[in-house]
Amino acid sequence: MTSGNNYCATSKTERCKHHVVFLLAALIAPIAAASSTPALERFTTALASAPAAAQVALGELQQLDEALIRPASLYPAFTTIPLPALTALYRFRRECSGTLDLVPAAARQFEQARCDKAILPETWFAAHPLHPLGGSYAWHYLAYHPEATAALQRFLHVRERPDALAGLGRLSDDNLDALAGGQHWLLQQQTLWWQHQQVWRRYAPAVWQPLARQAGLALTAAGQRCDLPLGNICANPLSAVDNWRRWLLACTALVVALALTYAWLQRRRLHSRQQFILQMLTHELRTPIASLGNVVESFRHGFDALPDSAQTGFGRLADGVQRMRQLADASRHYLSASGGRGALEAPATVILSEWLAAVCERHEGLQFCLEQDRQLALPLYWISLCLDNLLDNAGRYGKAPVRLSAAWCKGWLRLTVADAATIRPAPAWAWGWPSCAA
Image (cartoon, rainbow, N blue to C red):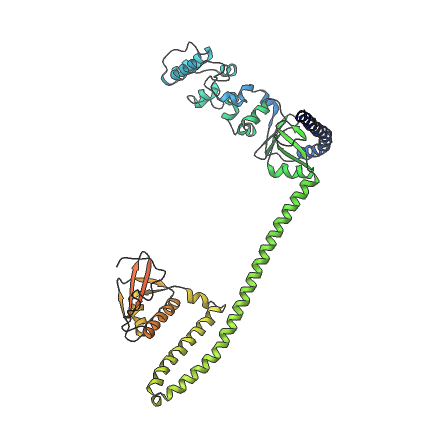
């Protein structure tokens, strides 16, 4: 008993909700329709004076047989003629032989005239618009008598002459059925068709959409909200919510664009500041480097008076100062805005054997092994800097002899620096390169 009472109460509540929703919809619909009517009047008044992309008189369409507008006329007449008859007609068309007892008399006459290459008068096509296999008799006739194209244009289906009649033949099936059914408004791919003063007019989106917005109206395809139905389309008034939604989307897009621009400017400013700091540090490093250079020069003059251990250390000191001076100069050019950065990164075309020979001249006792000589484009400054560091480390911390090997593999230049030490059996520098068979 308790369960049944709850069910009854729930059912009554649901029915009450449905009644309330229906009542609200019934009350709101006339208000929305009333607000749409003045907007529609403003829109039609403005649209009547707007330029149309194309137009065709209604009387010209009324002279056509309605079947020449319906899209179903383009398909075989399965609903009125049995399938065996259509099959026999199709075979007769291909072979001009067989029996046509089951097909209509007009089809037999037409197909026999086609096989006999006989001429049919225009009055015959006016009395017989559609072929049982689909399409107009005139279209099938023109396939064999193209000289009659001008005379039989008015007997063609609108889809068989899409450029005529202001382009009505390009309308969809639903719109063609609506046109044949007497509708006055059509909408297809944002192109608007309107029958006004016995004339069908076609308007481009750039023409009718601004006028609709000015009138406070939105034209959409039927199927969703529809305050004022206009055949297959709906006229809905633009509410304040719609306007605020568009403004909100526009403001959101503007804010996002401004945020991205601000982030880009901040990143660029930070990069400029970091570059300036690096330039200042590089500039300041040149002073102690110059002082060290002066010390090296003073030691150079008294080199013979130095003990043997000091002479070895002096060589390392002179080499380190020279490399520091080169790095400072390269950094200064790299960070400057005068194009030095591009010059350091730009590849230079060299012969591989000549470049390796120049590298070996800078390192005493170094020999290189080249598998195949090639002409390559290399960023010489940076690759020479890295290679000199590896060779210096091998000569300083490894065991003589130091050997430099160069090999070309799958588009990669592989440089290997190895010494005679047995602590590490693998080459000292083989990182990041693809494995290749020797």
